[in-house]
Length: 84
Ligand SMILES: [Zn+2]
Image 1 (cartoon, rainbow, N blue to C red):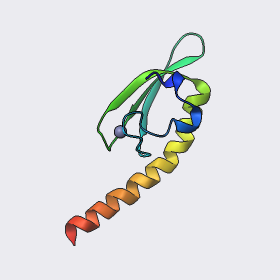
Image 2: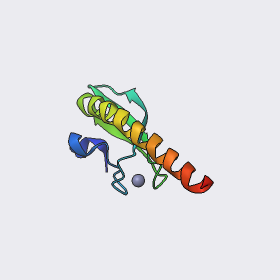
Image 3: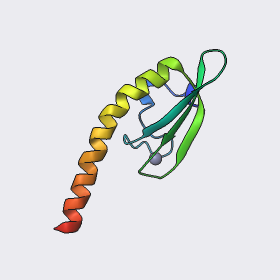
């Protein structure tokens, strides 16, 4: 599914598994005010690429800051599970 078809409020969720851990990798400019957005889901290990609007990318960048915090909490929890 192209990013442009995804509502901004759902863009931080993985299109494949709805994980909130989706991490934006990079965005590249396209003509006409669009960007090609690349994101990676650490949960289902899928990479997502597609056109997105600048508004969507800005919203995702904000939400992935929160997502990164959640990833760190999850990694820490897994580490504790494996070492305990
Ligand atoms: Zn996923």
